[in-house]
Each structure stands twice: as structure tokens, then as C-alpha cells.
Amino acid sequence: MTTPNERPLQQLPRRTFLRGMGLAMGLPWLESLLPREARAAGKRAPVRMAFVFFPNGAIMRDWKPADAGEKYTLPATLDALAEHRANFSVITGLAQDNGRAKGDGPGDHARCASTYLTGAHPYKTTGADIRVGVSVDQVAADRIGRLTKLPSIELGIEAGRNAGNCDSGYSCAYSANVSWKSESTPMAKEVNPRLAFERLFGGGSQEHRQDSLAHRQLYRQSILDMVADDAADLTRKLGATDRRKLDEYFTSVRELERRIESDESGDIVIGRPHLDLPQGTPKDVQQHIRLMYDVLALAFQSDVTRVATFMLGNAGSNRSYPMVDVTEGHHQLSHHGNEEEKMAKIQRIDRFLADQFAYFLGKLGSIAEGEGTLLDNCMICYGSGLSDGNRHDHADLPIVLAGRGGNTLKTGRHIDLGSETPLNNLFLSMLDRVGAGVDKLGDSSGRLTQIDG
Image (tube, rainbow, N blue to C red; front, side, top):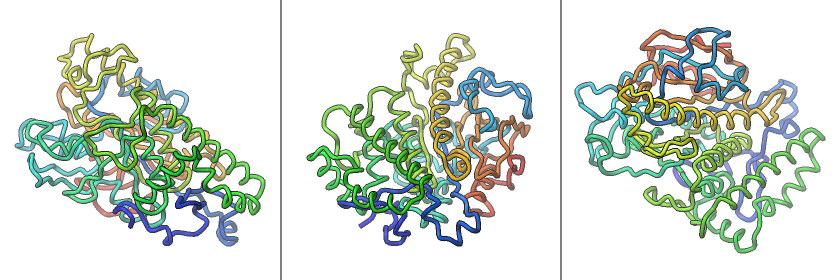
């Protein structure tokens, strides 16, 4: 049987996948496979959406541009994205009001993660009676998830747990998750690149994926070996452009397989690990982040899913970043008290994470799709549920919106909204563009028309 976040494959078009030995490998957008009437109507590739969360806020003086409009100057942290300037907008003045205490006292980190995509105020508890709201990604998954193998995918690089006290009387579930299927059901993230990769291409149930993985490991086979016959049959039916695109896609799949294999330490853990046990994850943080970004790019390229979340750390994460000469914990430093030395270290972390995001945008932009690129058909919201981590500020959040949303977004700008515009207004407008529009989400007060192209 399938897991709650997967659709039976028989509900989907036959040529959405290559099949073999219990696998179902998604295919990129190939115009040769469109029905004649769809090609004649100029049917476009689907729009995808992802939400990337980083913890502990940012040093806002190095994040927020001083000027608005198209001729704004990129500040020090976002200068990491300079190469992709034409393909994103910086949006300031957005807030998540329900991340504030509202009489509940401390616990801003737990609140910032749980409200980030919901816009709802979490019920303060360390027990099983957790309650917040449905997140924007799961609203989309509920409405358009039937169109893909996976309604959504949830990724991360830091293990977490859904029980116990992680922040001043708030359940760990609030700190470890940004994706919520219902007000009491978080969507656990996958932190192991191998298992995330298997979810994309393994057919049927988790047990079938385990059997397929064990078989390939025993015979040292690639996923591509398992679908070779079906791939050869398909290739004969494609035009020259789509044959080249398919070959490039296969190359990307195999390259990612090899990188996952080279980064795995010890025995591969078969099956989904308990979230308290980050076995099988790379020790190098940059490699880990980039592998997960590559898995996400492949998920969108193959149209296995059109909805994703990615947590670059749990709320309040105290990970150190020795690769940028920061040996202290991130959360510890975020309470910098305006000390310049500590703020400089936090800014190096901010810049490091922005560098990895630039890598992801470059990946999406390198994949041809239709008359443009995969990035043209994506909307990637990159940001945090806090702005100034020292003050635990839930207003003027650091938000970048990348991609062109199927050429419906006007990019290359700093959009200054002033203050206290609900972040969920942006989410309502994003939902419209993937065909999952709703009238209200969390504390939304209307659409964010300033992003319209």
C-alpha cells in the first residue's frame, strides 16, 4: 500500500513514468509526449512551488536593500545571488503576526517555524495535543497533488523529533516542522539524501522501495539499469530535441546517484530512519545541503511532485559552521546583543546559506524546459520566520521569491511593502499560480499583487 503522501501510480498517465523492477521513474517535460491537441494549444510546463526555511533570522542590515525598485543595490548577504538577480525579487515588510507571544511568553523559535507557512498561532504544549494550522504547501498538495506521484515532498538536513519540550514549553514538533497536513499533523521531513532519492523513483509501497534498493545494491545497479528497456522503447518515439533532453536528464540522475554513494558513510540504512537517528547523512554540511537541493531539482524536473519544503535547520538550531570559521553554535550567536564580532559571524552563516541557495537557482536555471528553463516555471520562497534573531522579531522578515512562476511574476526587484503585510498574502498569490487558489490562509488579508508580472 502507498504511504499517506503518495498517490497510486495507476491514477497517473502511463507515460509520466519509466518502469522496471518495481520502479517508477518520473520523466522530464517532453513535448513529444503531449497529445496533438495540447501541442496545438501551446500547453505549457506546470508551475512548481517550494518553501526553503533557515533558522534564527538574519543580520538584517546585510540582508535588506537600502533602496527599492529594479535598480536596488544587493546588500552583502544577498550579493551571493548576484548572478541570478534577474530571476528573483527581494520582498520586505512581510510579517507573521501569529509568531508573536500573544500572552504565551517565550518560545519564539518554535513559533517562528510553526507559523512560517501556516500563519496560525501554535497551541503551547509539550504533550500530544499539538495544534497550529494547515501550511501553504499542504493546501497545494491537497488540491493539485493528484496530478503527480507525490503530492509533496518534505526535506531537511537536521533530524528532529515530534515529542518533548524543545523551546520554553513548546513541543519539539513545532521546532522541527514547517509543513503541516492538518492543525495537529506535521509532515515529517526526510534528512537522508539516499532515502529522499528513493522516494522519487521507488514504485509502490515503502516495502517495494526497500526491496528494489536492496536488489540494486546487491548487483551494483543504477536506477537507470532497472528502467533501461522502457527507456529504449520511449527514446525511439521521441524527436531529436526531446531525445537530447532525456539524455541530459539521465545524466543528472546518474550523477546524483554517484554523489550520494560517495557521500554515504558505512552501511546504507534501508527504509525511513527514525528522525532521532540521522544515520546515512553526509557529515559535510555543504555537501548535505547541495545533495538535497539536487534531489529537489530532480523532483521538479521529473514532475514527481510540484510542491516541496526544505528546512536548512530546525528552529533554534545550534549547529556550528566551521567552513566559514564559525565554531560557536548558530542559536547561541543569534543572541548577539549587538556585539559586532558575533554579528559578523552570523552574517557569515547567512552568506554561506545564501551561497547554497545560489547553487540551487543555478541548477534550476541550467535545466531547459519548453522555451525557457525549469527556474522559469518555479516559485521558490527562501526565508526565515524571524528577522532579527537577537530581538526575536517576527516582522520585516527576510524573504526572497525566486523563479518566474510560469512567466507570471515580475522579478529583478526589491519590493518594499512597508510593514506588517501578512506573509500569507504572498502564499495566496503563489497558490493561484499552481492552480490551488483559496480565499484565505491563516491570517491572510488579500493577494500580494505587487509580485504580478
